[in-house]
Length: 140
Image (cartoon, rainbow, N blue to C red):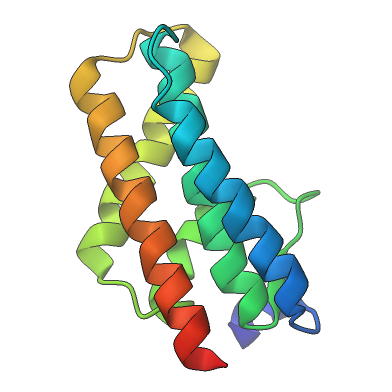
């Protein structure tokens, strides 16, 4: 993490439990919204991805860091720090990063998203939110 601070990808911040809780609540709302019937798969996928980012951000901020959103790659940084903040398995990080890449493809190419991709994003969002909740409680 110190290296990421040194190269300007992260900055140190005072961990604020209220901010972390707000991010987790936002992630949970996004997860629920992503399950809304009638929305396109692309919208559901995007909203589920947002829930993943909010949960990853909660883990990062709870650890006393935040990404610099003015720098490119801040989503990638949030995902790649999960083994350092949350202790998340690197195989899960690879899967989350694949979702990040897919989201970029969808956003910039207009590609369609299948049900399987939506289901995967929903599954990962729910699991990450739960993992961050448990970790934050254990950390208090």
